[in-house]
Length: 199
Image 1 (cartoon, rainbow, N blue to C red):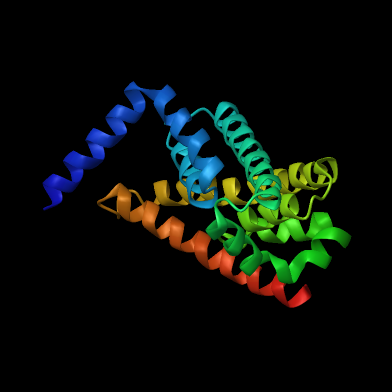
Image 2 (spheres, rainbow, N blue to C red):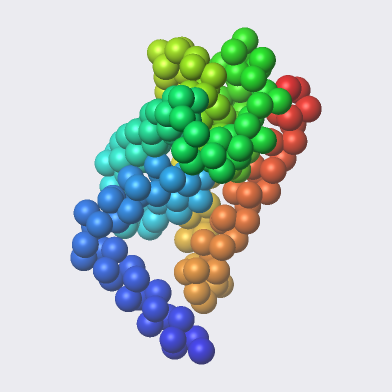
């Protein structure tokens, strides 16, 4: 079993090294759709030398900002049509209770939503549905994204650093990535609870 796992790890990392541009494309698209886990893994792999730090951060930033722009545009479209009603219901279900916060405390609401898994996309979509001015959302989103990226990327990068210290003690790379992701989710849950109490 260990030999198969090592073979798969070596195969995956070999292709990531050989076709590094594909890794950046996956990072870009992943940031548009998901965010947390993708950024954490990318930062972890950056420490291991599979990505360059600055291009990885820029790719992640542009993917996140473009994704947020698309989610906002989707919200604008949903506001004026009956199409994709399930997405409209999803955004309303999650984000409608925070409409006043979104209007009055845009930055804080967007920033907190970055740390609440699955909530940020609903908040950005809801902002479009409410026809809030994109300039106001964008200013808050850029600053919130930069702060969020600094925290999550640092956690991923330094988890890679600490895991490399234990490399002799851990047989599989996937196990160390799993541990790092668990640490991220625990951190995210704690921050989510703290900020939900304040909102």
